[in-house]
Image 1 (tube, helix red, strand yellow):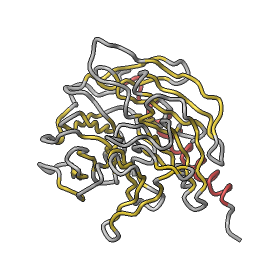
Image 2 (image 1 turned 135 degrees about the vertical axis):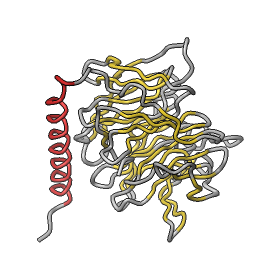
Image 3 (image 1 turned 135 degrees about the horizontal axis):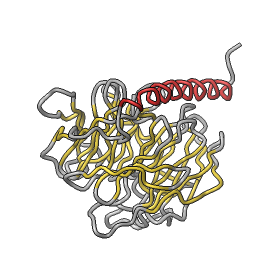
Image 4 (image 1 turned 90 degrees about the vertical axis):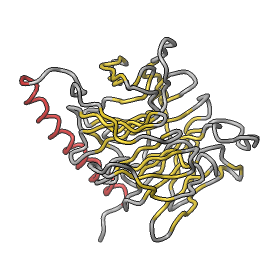
Length: 317
């Protein structure tokens, strides 16, 4: 007999936790020989430029994929090559990206109001575009749990002249196989980036309007409880806002913030470190052979920086 879905999920999470623990132990063993900074000095570099508004970076194991939302195209950059290439267009103004359990690209479409799947062979497939019969606003970012649960945010940025049918900005969980959709939160003003803790028991969501990051205890069925504020990074003296969110193997949160990127300790609710970016950062994703590089979309550009951390999450394969 095959393993039950619950047991499979436990095994997957246990394997992920073990891998992160091994990486953490290795990093701790090296601490005496290095300083405490997460970002390696003098390694921030321009990886791609010449776009209108870049977003949604995701690493497929060999390349970084990202959106140019107004350009209505999704691009792909192979490290070492001089320029990115168009992966597909039009893109329905795709915004955030991640990968499903089979490694296929999922998209939060700013323009269409849908979460979609795109493959070279099959093109675009709509996964969900409505909640309780009402059209979604403008899905912004998306992640996938190790059992296939799809989690996404739905602010109103792409509504244009449309009136919101759902009537709120939402954070959702979707079981694609069952079609069951769970509303996690409808009280955030502008829910944006989101990420799971390494053990997948906590969901982090950034709220652009209030410059805050929130946490939820996430149950196996996609329901959430225990909503709590993790950090407020408001700083009106610097350009930039809370937007993209990622997590490393140690559980630290990486979030775009005023001035660039903030690394947050979710237990103490403090900013551990900041990375200044040349332009306003919009999102970020782990990449590189060992997931120790951070790719950052920033208005017209994409940047890359080396770190002493290791990434985790469905946006890094």
